[in-house]
Image (cartoon, rainbow, N blue to C red; front, side, top):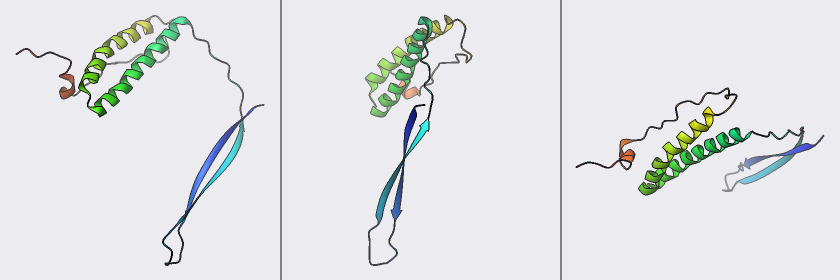
Length: 127
Protein backbone atom coordinates (compact mmCIF):
# COMPACT_ATOMS: atom_id res chain seq x y z
CA UNK A 1 0.00 0.00 0.00
CA UNK A 2 1.47 3.41 -0.94
CA UNK A 3 2.08 6.01 1.74
CA UNK A 4 1.66 9.76 1.68
CA UNK A 5 4.33 11.77 3.53
CA UNK A 6 3.00 14.62 5.68
CA UNK A 7 5.42 17.21 7.05
CA UNK A 8 4.51 18.95 10.31
CA UNK A 9 6.65 21.86 11.53
CA UNK A 10 6.53 23.49 14.97
CA UNK A 11 8.29 26.73 15.89
CA UNK A 12 9.56 26.93 19.45
CA UNK A 13 10.65 30.27 20.88
CA UNK A 14 12.81 30.27 24.00
CA UNK A 15 13.13 33.50 25.97
CA UNK A 16 16.18 33.59 28.28
CA UNK A 17 15.43 34.00 31.98
CA UNK A 18 18.38 36.17 32.93
CA UNK A 19 17.94 39.90 32.54
CA UNK A 20 21.34 40.53 30.97
CA UNK A 21 20.53 38.93 27.59
CA UNK A 22 18.15 40.70 25.27
CA UNK A 23 17.85 38.02 22.59
CA UNK A 24 15.70 34.96 22.17
CA UNK A 25 16.18 31.65 20.44
CA UNK A 26 13.84 30.27 17.82
CA UNK A 27 13.93 26.62 16.83
CA UNK A 28 11.88 25.01 14.10
CA UNK A 29 11.33 21.28 14.46
CA UNK A 30 9.89 19.33 11.55
CA UNK A 31 8.47 15.82 11.69
CA UNK A 32 7.55 13.54 8.80
CA UNK A 33 4.59 11.22 9.15
CA UNK A 34 3.69 8.53 6.65
CA UNK A 35 -0.01 7.98 6.17
CA UNK A 36 -1.21 4.99 4.14
CA UNK A 37 -3.73 5.76 1.41
CA UNK A 38 -5.45 4.02 -1.45
CA UNK A 39 -5.35 5.39 -4.94
CA UNK A 40 -8.58 6.99 -6.08
CA UNK A 41 -10.01 6.16 -9.44
CA UNK A 42 -10.01 9.08 -11.82
CA UNK A 43 -13.51 10.32 -12.48
CA UNK A 44 -14.39 10.73 -16.14
CA UNK A 45 -17.04 13.37 -16.75
CA UNK A 46 -19.46 13.37 -19.63
CA UNK A 47 -19.20 16.18 -22.17
CA UNK A 48 -22.12 18.19 -20.78
CA UNK A 49 -20.77 17.92 -17.22
CA UNK A 50 -17.32 19.02 -18.40
CA UNK A 51 -18.83 22.09 -20.05
CA UNK A 52 -20.81 22.91 -16.90
CA UNK A 53 -17.66 22.54 -14.79
CA UNK A 54 -15.80 24.89 -17.14
CA UNK A 55 -18.65 27.42 -16.87
CA UNK A 56 -18.50 27.26 -13.06
CA UNK A 57 -14.72 27.69 -13.17
CA UNK A 58 -15.08 30.72 -15.46
CA UNK A 59 -17.63 32.36 -13.17
CA UNK A 60 -15.47 31.72 -10.09
CA UNK A 61 -12.49 33.22 -11.91
CA UNK A 62 -14.48 36.34 -12.79
CA UNK A 63 -15.59 36.75 -9.19
CA UNK A 64 -11.97 36.43 -8.06
CA UNK A 65 -10.92 39.09 -10.58
CA UNK A 66 -13.61 41.41 -9.17
CA UNK A 67 -11.78 41.44 -5.85
CA UNK A 68 -8.50 42.40 -7.51
CA UNK A 69 -10.15 45.08 -9.65
CA UNK A 70 -11.78 46.62 -6.58
CA UNK A 71 -8.54 46.50 -4.63
CA UNK A 72 -6.69 48.23 -7.48
CA UNK A 73 -9.48 50.77 -7.99
CA UNK A 74 -9.16 50.00 -11.67
CA UNK A 75 -12.46 51.33 -12.99
CA UNK A 76 -11.96 50.20 -16.58
CA UNK A 77 -11.13 46.64 -15.57
CA UNK A 78 -14.09 46.56 -13.16
CA UNK A 79 -16.45 47.84 -15.87
CA UNK A 80 -15.25 45.19 -18.34
CA UNK A 81 -15.69 42.45 -15.74
CA UNK A 82 -19.20 43.65 -14.90
CA UNK A 83 -20.15 43.43 -18.57
CA UNK A 84 -18.71 39.92 -18.88
CA UNK A 85 -20.37 38.45 -15.78
CA UNK A 86 -24.00 38.26 -17.05
CA UNK A 87 -22.78 36.36 -20.13
CA UNK A 88 -20.90 33.89 -17.92
CA UNK A 89 -23.98 33.44 -15.70
CA UNK A 90 -26.18 32.82 -18.74
CA UNK A 91 -23.68 30.27 -20.04
CA UNK A 92 -23.65 28.47 -16.68
CA UNK A 93 -27.47 28.40 -16.44
CA UNK A 94 -27.78 27.11 -20.00
CA UNK A 95 -25.27 24.32 -19.42
CA UNK A 96 -26.69 23.49 -15.97
CA UNK A 97 -30.16 22.92 -17.45
CA UNK A 98 -28.77 20.44 -19.98
CA UNK A 99 -27.34 18.16 -17.29
CA UNK A 100 -29.03 14.79 -17.04
CA UNK A 101 -29.51 13.78 -14.24
CA UNK A 102 -29.57 17.12 -12.49
CA UNK A 103 -27.00 17.58 -9.70
CA UNK A 104 -28.21 17.18 -6.13
CA UNK A 105 -27.34 20.79 -5.32
CA UNK A 106 -29.61 23.28 -7.04
CA UNK A 107 -28.15 26.26 -8.85
CA UNK A 108 -29.19 29.18 -6.69
CA UNK A 109 -29.34 32.85 -7.44
CA UNK A 110 -26.17 34.02 -9.14
CA UNK A 111 -27.05 37.69 -8.95
CA UNK A 112 -24.48 39.94 -7.42
CA UNK A 113 -25.11 43.19 -5.61
CA UNK A 114 -22.82 46.09 -6.36
CA UNK A 115 -22.30 49.30 -4.50
CA UNK A 116 -23.84 52.27 -6.26
CA UNK A 117 -20.47 54.00 -6.63
CA UNK A 118 -19.11 50.97 -8.50
CA UNK A 119 -22.22 50.15 -10.53
CA UNK A 120 -22.40 53.62 -12.06
CA UNK A 121 -19.66 52.61 -14.49
CA UNK A 122 -22.03 50.13 -16.12
CA UNK A 123 -24.67 52.54 -17.25
CA UNK A 124 -24.60 55.71 -19.26
CA UNK A 125 -26.26 58.67 -17.66
CA UNK A 126 -28.82 60.70 -19.61
CA UNK A 127 -28.39 64.39 -18.97
